[in-house]
Length: 388
Image (tube, rainbow, N blue to C red; front, top):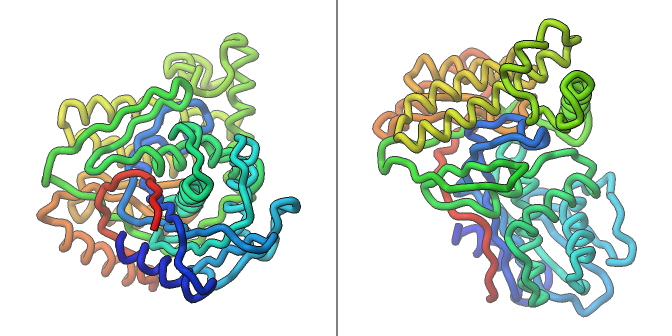
């Protein structure tokens, strides 16, 4: 992390001829269980990882805001009285959306200059977008001497993505980036906001992220379609079970089984995935409380199969990676994030991690001709801000 902070500091000096005043640091995340359950009012399990976005910033002497992104090699220039989407610099929309939401929250944002540096893999399903949003919010709050509760920071960053960027995501990504704790899996009830950090057994296993290097695009297309299908499935149950059904969270597994045969496709499969996934998260939480890591792994494999068959958000590359993970001794494996490309998260015994990563990468490359990205992840603390 210190290396990324130093990169941001040096880059700011190069671009703007002075030192930055503040830094916002926010991690990416892996989704352990709870695929597409968050916007359905359900349960999730996740972990912040040691891949971060750093936003270094200082107030500007001009009326313009200037933000340079190292990974994109591009600068976005805008004024605070004319914040609108940019079809050319879509990455900057995440920054602008956070500015809009901070202003709505009563933070008097002044023109600023900033640089964005990071090592969160883009397109891997570990939420580089939420990491950017949260790092931006943390930096700008610190820059303006403002303070907001951590829950409000997570929520305003989600609103930025929902309303400004136009992606109907749930709260999982922003929550994980804000609330991460070292060596702990996070549990969240997205409706009640009950959450806890569950410590992992020390030195017994680790997480390996394997990026399929397949396409991963969310703002339009399949993600929005699944969101709509879930809302339609909830409305279908509402007509039969009553007005208390607002989201699929409100349908029990027993109620689903009772009505399953009458449901139209693909709503039946979408509902089956979400409702069964909620059960898997609750079972996973109990498994961690009892220290049953093998049980958690079984639930991860089951989650991927549900995503593959019922939610149809996997890809042949992700399915191959999960199959290879099982073949080479992973405790559990599944796609992480929205799907349709991206990465798998693999739960592996600590002593076998290097051999596992090598064998899976070699076999995947042999079968597909694609060299995967392999990232050994340490579970890390959540977002923070500090001054130079």
